[in-house]
Image (tube, helix red, strand yellow):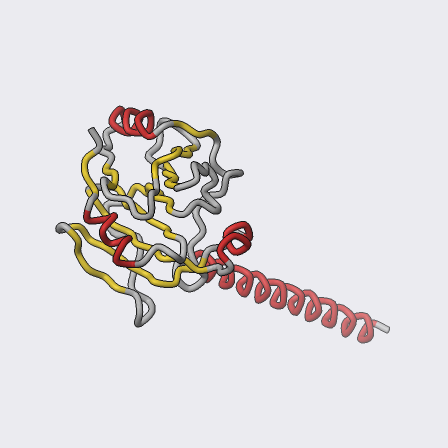
Length: 202
């Protein structure tokens, strides 16, 4: 009886160890998948949604707020296809995190707008070349990353444009990354011209 109880004890310990090993493996697989999804290029880029951004302000208000916290704002002076600035979305006027929306229909919706520009504070370019078609270059002396087929995670975007892919250019000016997402009918050359036209907002 003592030996049987001893064997049962060993089996209980072995079973517990197996549960721990399996659970740990599952967690590592989950963590690995989660990290892969964080990659802006392997899984695509999705900017903050309207649910993540607290409120909308004008471009002038955004510039003033950024100046107050020590950032200069650059804006494009040349926009394709009759696009006009509509709104800037942010979570806080005390941070340099904004999404600027440009539209020819006056849309304020960043999920489906023809062109958006997201500000991301960083002293270096936040993207790296992962695919053969990705390009790292310079425009006006600024570091630039270009991608012809960046994945967009919004269902509304796919419904409107019939695809989940967009043109993407990220340009670093000073300590801010300006990340542009353009809908399919805007060509990469047009988007490059947008970046070339970037000027300090007055």
